[in-house]
Image (cartoon, rainbow, N blue to C red):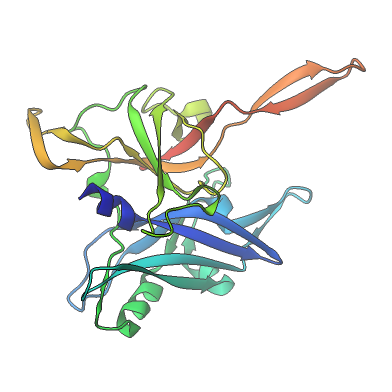
Length: 269
């Protein structure tokens, strides 16, 4: 079911730095399936670079968070209730397990969480089934599907301001549309714009195509599937800032930052 797919992919994040606490969003990504020992391999937590690093704008420096906490969903075998378990990584663990690109401007971070999750699996009670279903490369856009274009509907899965359905542990899914040319680099960055009003805490959210039952086979023929399918478009990074130059009452030229209820998404690739 689509509800469960969306439920298990995402996780709220809580970061601590000095005396500050921040919230954000993330999702799971995996290159391969569990091994014979039922342990995970190539299992990653995806979010934004600015979620992992606190920025000191005054001194133009970035500082690694002191800790980050994500949540793993499990299902109780006896009654199929969904429960959450928190897993916290220390500053040293974050530094050792996080990968970012050398380009400071690429706002993507991936964290190797295999060791932490496998430890949880080994120590968890036998009455639990782990349900942290990841995105895989099979969900990436490819040529054997409906073409993706500007104005297409999209969905953003995350935790705006740390808000979610606390009873069912379900994230918030917000709708939007692709607002720039698909496949082009919006304003020179490797991503695209979306028309969606989002909020702090949505950083790191998974952006997908609007789920649908129609798809194309390898020969380009229309087929209908029993379950709805979607494709991973990328990672939400925040709202582009439009800087406008105006003359104030004193006749001085100043810059004003404006927001247009747009969002920027890094391509899944």
